[in-house]
Length: 326
Image (tube, rainbow, N blue to C red; front, side):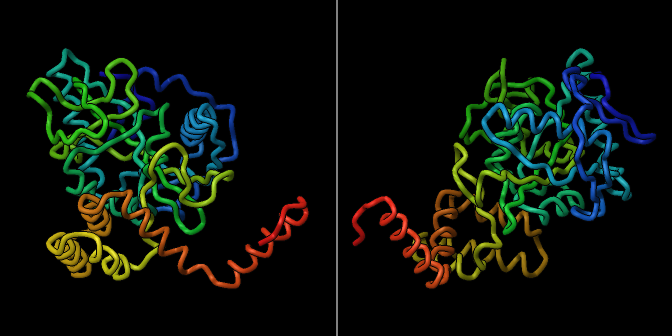
């Protein structure tokens, strides 16, 4: 079994050997548990290690994140303890199948916001990831950063999870594969030698993935939902759902719109979680389409006075450069 990075009396968490290569030298992390669900508590010592690996990895990609807070999953409720113990049982089972090696790793998940973090902490990941849950390795968080939502304050949220990989097979990015190709394999990766993406199949998500830490951060050089090398997930607070449905009804086939309306109804009747509602809508309408609609909606809601001021500012800058003004 892989060596543990930390222990609790009831639920030790196992990670791979490379997790020990961590620095304690950085400081300045706030472990304010009030930022997240009550399931998470401050992680002052572990938080420094998590922050160091996260910041270092993004700096190598030319980004300068500002970590706002890091909190640790306390596994304090009865169900949370049960999920943690279940994870340990499956880790031991997978190890027995593969000569004593469960291949447990740390991996990042980009959340849509605080609401999804709370929902996952309370109920698990749900059943919205029909093509498998996509996660990023500990030292390659960029893809999860890209897929995370951005709130109105520019804050993003990531979950750092322990993940049972077992024996992996290659699953190309963008693949529609929904399960392992044979019983021999437990999970998927985009590259066997240097993976940038882990794939946990839907029937194993809540037994092979255990949320350990939640991290909030901003990218000070970036403003909102901008391009950092790939598509970003739309953040729902930017557009009321009824308005979104109204626009989608002019673009998508009527049967797909009817399904989205039904999904919304199930959410309002508390039959599904907000996270599951969002994931189901994303499965019907692509992220590219949703982002385009939300950006258009926000642009139309920009106050006319703000646009006028921006226009005057642009004219002033052109005059200053000696350029003609229309």
